[in-house]
Image (cartoon, rainbow, N blue to C red):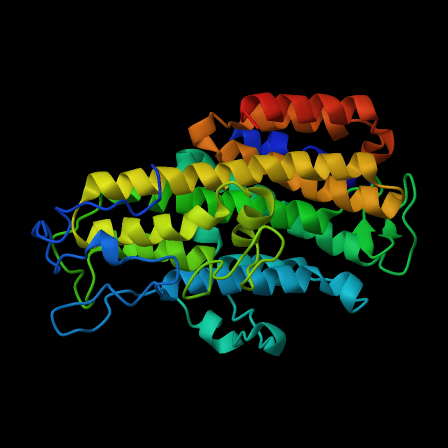
Length: 393
């Protein structure tokens, strides 16, 4: 097991080689003609409760919004995460090939999950996968990132057979309801949080809402009723949430919609901005319909900054939970989530996130013979300070 857990602790090193959102009144909004192929959407008609699809129509009155690709990858992420939880939930040894196939959508790996409203055949027949967009912005290094995640699937499978044992220094097993390796690392959390950054954040923020905004917005994609730019924005929305209105009815104390992954953490760890994210998504999409690219990019920048702040704040939040934890189970869970979010800081490119920054923090925290068991308040405080300064939290 020590060779297995050594790979967990050095996962990041391996990978490392590799406007505002308010609807201001503008009297010109009602009269200015559209610069695109759609009838102009008046920004003043947008409200925080306007369903995403309602205003984006073709000349026949049919919606041009297609959330299929984004929602499908979201459900694939849900299905993979559900499978990762089976070791503890169902006292079950996991199969690394199954996880790898779910990641790449090969070999019909998905099955029905009624509690998540997932139909396996719908995912198996899809032409998209999680793997094909993970670390998309990393260029030639993206394949190394993907293979690193797949190695973690192998580590998770080998760890899963210890579901009946109790974790201790040098011994894998359960700490409370959490399954940790011999160095006290909850591998399932490292995988999940690394994919929140490497799949969701990177693809939504660094691709679809960044370089993707330079896509064609004058011509309909053959066989579809949307432009490439329209689809890029809609895919970003669909990969963030399954809901027609993201975070509808949410307050600081209560999340109003069922959200998972990045969408949930934006609410939990960015209280200053979460309520502004949906209006920005809606106004940005209206700007795409109007071919108002400057406005679309302005709204996209706000959304991207809000997501990066959530990731950085979550990393700090879980490190802080390690400090306040009173049991090994609580602390193991906190550091597992924290490590995954720290790994994901490399995708926070607006704030200068990089593999070198993430890896330096991870090395100081867990690149020691006993990982979690060697942690000290000094190590945790140094990590918190570095992230806080880097992201101006």
